[in-house]
Image (cartoon, rainbow, N blue to C red; front, side, top):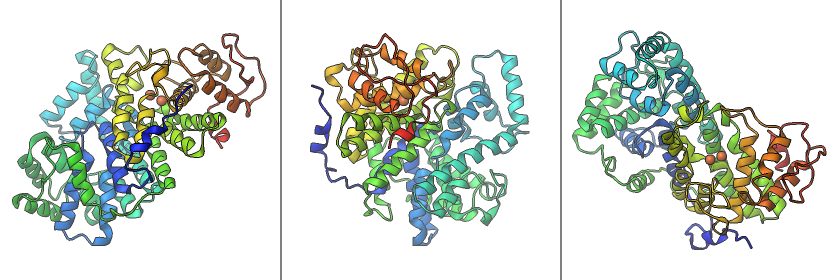
Length: 496
Ligand SMILES: [Fe+2]
Ligand SMILES: [Fe+2]
């Protein structure tokens, strides 16, 4: 008999589900660092730095909570421009995002030697010199337009997610204006001086400090901050940061050698509303928001996590799991691919065959999903199930080649929902498949790779919305017939 995975919860300190908003967001902020190609813990260190600067600058206490979440979530929209950036540079979006933070990208007509070096190493890495040089020239010519487009995409998306999470207008506007510059040379609105919300100005200083501190050390971080005082950054905030630096009160818990958990604990201590506990509905809302972040990474997966969650929910219900198990399965499905934020779009959107090195990056994503989610107390079980979504019953899956006896019913549900979701969507190498093709392909995976009961439950759920057609002969299970008339992209209708 297949075991459910409910035993995981028995030892959990979070048996009652109690956890604060900052514990959840601080844990999931590691996923945002991945998309930005940032050094692990970037969002948390930015939070520490920004809150210290706010204290020094005597930010009113009623704005502290908004600032705290703006700092943790400043990159929540960052996945939305990954595909576009990948198209523009013809290379690894994460590497470009990581490198460009050290550059002054406001002067496309006068690029520095280091900017040119960065472009030469990252743009069209497999092309010849002439093609690469031509692309770099084109990037220079179109840079203002591209910057505006990509930063607007990222900032609007980020602000929208922060609003959905209920963080309030101040936090959302801070995220929207993160890339504005004091002298009006930033994006997307070219806002100037105090037109830029104060919280956004603090976030901009904090992220700059962390990038340079972890990359080049404290002195370089302060020096570049001062060099850009009055151009990129609010001079008052530069003074506050410099004063903290001189008093040795800026960098505690920000060292790259610091354990990520110590940095996180220090950031949690600064949460102005740390006693505020989350209810189940709020945890669901956060899972949905981060599913959106994952899905925005590539236009091929723009509704993947949400679709897999709908399918998993329907399967779990049909199988007869209890309501709390159904809720847990749905959360795992929403977040199963969160580790995919670490995979470059040059791989995710690639039309040709992946190289061995590229496959290695893909194979790592379920393990990363697990490690990110494990940091959230009430999501321990969700973490395990998310980490197993590419395992197969016959031991041919990844990352751990688990076998049937190792895989819980909940993991099997997610695995079936994930295959169904993937086949329903366009991929770089094929169009979305029709339902009869999906059933045929999945039927060949039963019962050796995918669980037949979960597949039956899926088909039963789908059949509720479809006309009747014959099933492919490859599948010997006793599932109900389904239709091929329409493509089952929008599964939300049968999830409820
Ligand atoms: Fe996956
Ligand atoms: Fe997936």
